[in-house]
Image 1: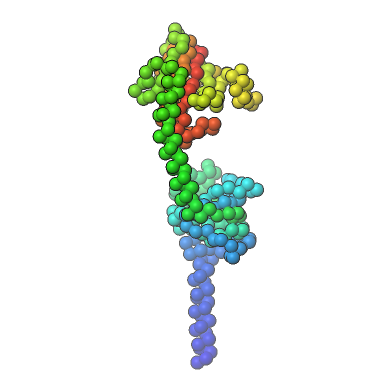
Image 2: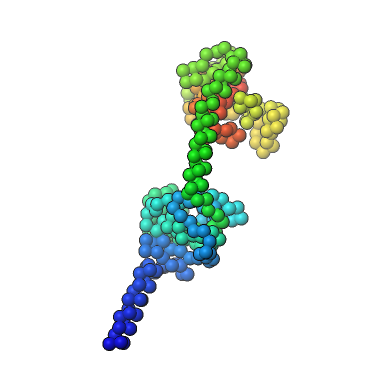
Length: 303
């Protein structure tokens, strides 16, 4: 009887062990969760802070599709993940929840599962068992509480900028004695020299010299070399020449496009663009969110 009890106990212990470990991974050196995520820890710090749902993780990571590197920020820890509910069985979120600060681990996700939801590299082939590997070192954790606090502060700042824009723009119009009326969309077009050449129309090839500024006069971009040098934004690695494009075929901010349709070859104009016709809440390089813009335009040619 004692031997039988030992055998039964051993059976259940063995069964429990295999249930906890999940199915066997087909990747050498890896374990596999019940949902299908493959994982391997090079270093574990179970005594340190563990990642939780909603946390943002600061990591160094190499990401690859089989042997092809997709991303690498080794030596440059960055905020890379905000842990959310899994999108499919065995996705990376399950692995992130295993991590503690200081852990070094590799997770392998079935590429076919990812391909059903995310764009994949052109060399990806379905049905051949490819894996997407995440080699992760967890450097830090921003807790959900702090993430929520940051989001609230950001939203408050954005709301303030949005509410202040109309006042700032109105003051600029008044201070610069601008008497032209805005268009229905809110765009100001001040044509300083009437163009006598071909009118700008959809499908026409145009060349335009431009200088873009914030309301405080700071130049953020220009096609004119002398202006770039004077404004301290000169870049020796770019050409300084009129912007050439086909009207209607190049994605441009709405304010620029609307203004161009009112101009002709030879026109020189100043346009004042509210942010909803510019870069809006997102801003752009050198352009803060909710920034009205001033462009000096010269339509060099229209063909």
